[in-house]
Image 1 (cartoon, rainbow, N blue to C red):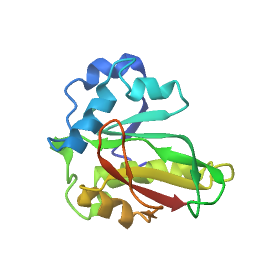
Image 2 (image 1 turned 45 degrees about the vertical axis):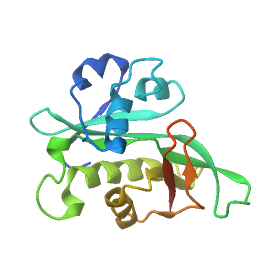
Image 3 (image 1 turned 60 degrees about the vertical axis):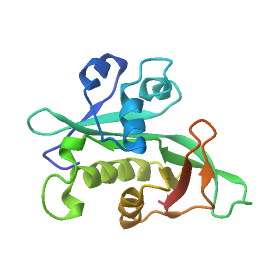
Length: 177
């Protein structure tokens, strides 16, 4: 983890500090913001903690929450869609507050979003003997995020799928650890 970001384990008690957290106005940005702020029973981060997902907040040197990341257990058919399922790690959600998008200035690899993703990849890599791949799902209408994950080494896994709850199409992406 970069020295100017502090990783904080998320707990239900921290929800009150996140009520103003806002990733942006696009539907996928709103969904990410809503996930981290949802109360117990709301289908968000607090509920995911009960299912073995780890969630971390990332704060800058001023103590401001710039973003969050999450990592949980999953199974995925890999490398082909007809292969038997294998244990995997999954990034359910990763978000950076809108006011911190593109910060700090400089190369994309130095930005908060890349630092958070790097930390999640490093954490998943520590479990690669039991979970050899890291998967995530990204809205097909979010090319900026798709490029971001591709720069980190993720590739498309199988064909996109439609979320029955939201009706949105997601691209499945995977990184072999």
